[in-house]
Length: 83
Image (cartoon, rainbow, N blue to C red; front, side, top):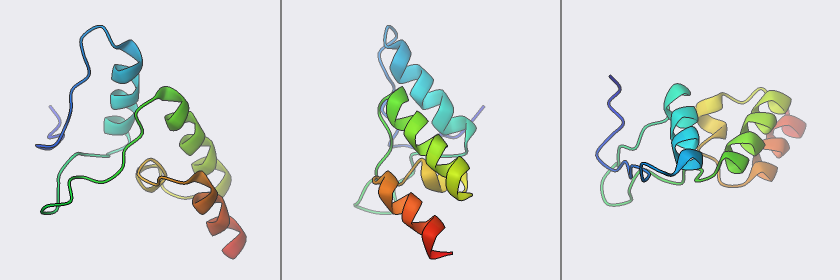
């Protein structure tokens, strides 16, 4: 079992894309715990958003959990050029 956090919004049973996205997030160690009033922060909602961030993580060496919680993939790619 995984403690995904109290802010997890579970996809509908018929939403296979939502379940694939959630599976990728949980397998990467991303959870849905809020710090206080802000909520857990941004999380990808589609498999396409997950694929974009996985590709950016592979290109830059950024950890998957960081890549999957970063809104802008350009920000991830700029980290590579800054190194």
